[in-house]
View: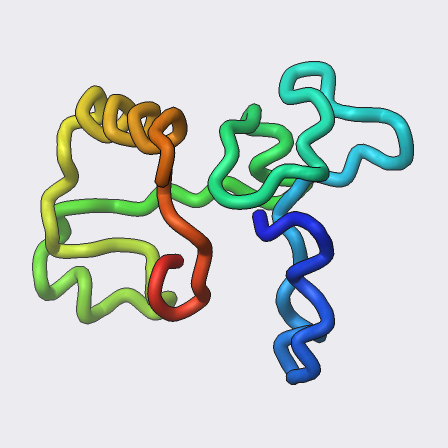
Amino acid sequence: TRGGGLEIGTGTFLDKIIVSSVPNHGGDNPCPNCGDQSSLDGVICSCLDCFLAGGNLYLFVYSVSKAIFLAKQRGGTCTTATSDPSDEVISRANFLLTSKDGFGLYDLLENN
């Protein structure tokens, strides 16, 4: 999330396509699991319902063959790289969420 209205007002075509990923539960109705996170920015921890915000969940597949990778019609759904073990990924994410610098400031091209 970028918080504080930073998603808009860039004065470019991006204003039409970039939207906040903060879940909108409408008015004064924060998520019962996550609470009101509308004023937060950066990477946040949320429940799956807030993360999806009515969208779909897609599985990203690791360790596919080069043939499968090249045959995929929709990019961004798989990789030939191997994944780190899930416990390491979760531990790393929790560390970054609680560290001072965290994940760093979001940047569409440099830190996405």
